[in-house]
Amino acid sequence: MKKYLAEFIGTFFLVLTVGCTVIGGGAGVIPPLAIGASLMVMIFAGGHVSGGHFNPAVTVGVWLRGRCDTKDVPGYFAAQLLAAVVAACVVKYLRPGVVVTAMSPVLGAAFLAEFLFTFALVYMVLNVATSKDTAGNSFYGLAIGMTVMVGAFAVGNISGGAFNPAVAVGISVMGLSAWPNLWLYLVAELVAAGVAAMIFKFLNPADK
Image (cartoon, rainbow, N blue to C red; front, side, top):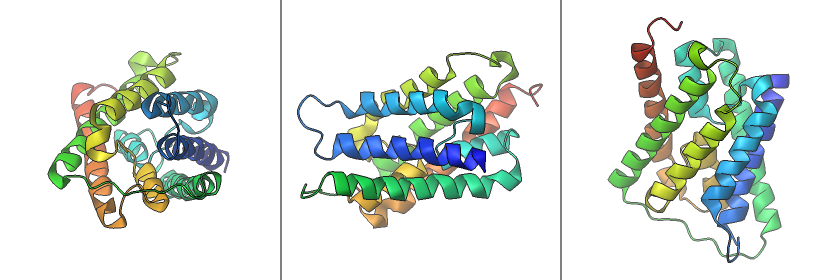
């Protein structure tokens, strides 16, 4: 239960930051910086409890890599997705009256953007947070947060820069993304997680 609560808290503040910085954030607000920083601090806060996934794609990657028990996967998913919905509702309460327009991504470009940077994110997590060669390091939260920040800067205007099925659900609840586009995020991100896990295992065959 402690692991699931840690996943809920971390995912909640990540999605809350996404919503509050993108919707009515005001002049001078730079969403990618805030989003990457929020992920970083939540990983440092809860990583020692749950692993600091805060992202179903990361959970899939870590599970396929062999560092997450199968029995924990449904609980992680439930905590992450519930946190995203609750955070989205809080954003709507905090930003009343703000007109939100759903993005209209070009599907092929958005799919590729989400795939590439979700791959980068999961690959980064596996290398800095699960590898025996980097065990006990103190930089993993910064590295993971910076990866999300880089992706948001690079392709945020193409796909929305979710790189996370929970974030995709959250932005759909907020109205930033149309519900019919949800499949794009889920498929691209979960496939990317699987590919990242396979490549990690191929490159690190002795790291069981």
